[in-house]
Length: 198
Image (cartoon, rainbow, N blue to C red):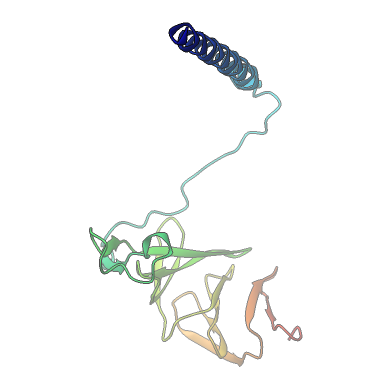
């Protein structure tokens, strides 16, 4: 009698397990069908390009590596992984090599850029981006640049606002009361402060 009772509970347990497996498999089948239904619109053919505007891309300037000025790769400390306070105990390199880059400023008079090292330090060089790029040595790190149509530029340093001619010579300097500079038409610039417009 005990043996019959034992097998009876095993039979009930196996049938419950079988029913649960069928429910899970049916749910998986339904979810895969819905995922196929969701992803099927992504397989549709692309929209005709007759409705899309055409975009022209052209080369403005070519800055060659180490020509005309030497560009150095610098080692930069990698950020700590996962919000750790220190990466001293974490295996692997602690520094990564980074190349210099150009931060650009666009204005009606053209495009200027300031060269920055891979660790974001300014190289005190402004570049006028034309067919033949022109390098202009600066005395200190600029906040903003604005190209003029006559080949010159406005440079916003952290104090004065300086007007340079096409040869990179300083023409005149103005006391800068503002913090930022915005390029405008007719080789003009707006100097903006957080409190007032100057």
